[in-house]
Length: 162
Image 1 (cartoon, rainbow, N blue to C red):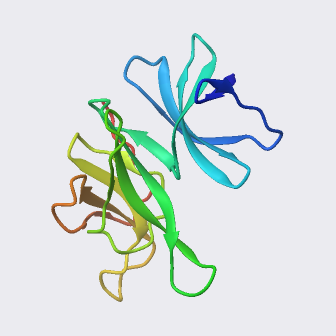
Image 2 (image 1 turned 60 degrees about the horizontal axis):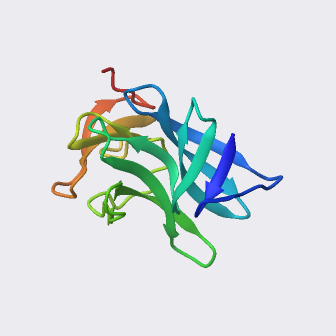
């Protein structure tokens, strides 16, 4: 695949791709490209075998069912020097506007998934009660409107069937 940034070819020996999310047409997709210490959102086209850098600071993208937004995790400063945590974010593809989903204050190290055009799913440790152990699947409003709610106990890596 050819990688373009601002219309110019981009090459590096350290390219690493992950977190692929396909559009409904099965031809277009989004992924994370890690290179030179940066995490880049790329949009790909299978028939053309071409990737285009869309945004920076994106890990594990997930395309909304309506194809208008990308949910992802972003590294943000954590407690202590040199520490970070992952925070969920949503990027509007038409405007480039980012929304930090601050209703979820805990570290979320998971591939986020869209349940529908308004709700995100993700796994994280279940700390609701001392008896809970392991991961749980949580639901969060993509507009930052409500606090997260536990959807399923003892579950991880959600996937929505469409």
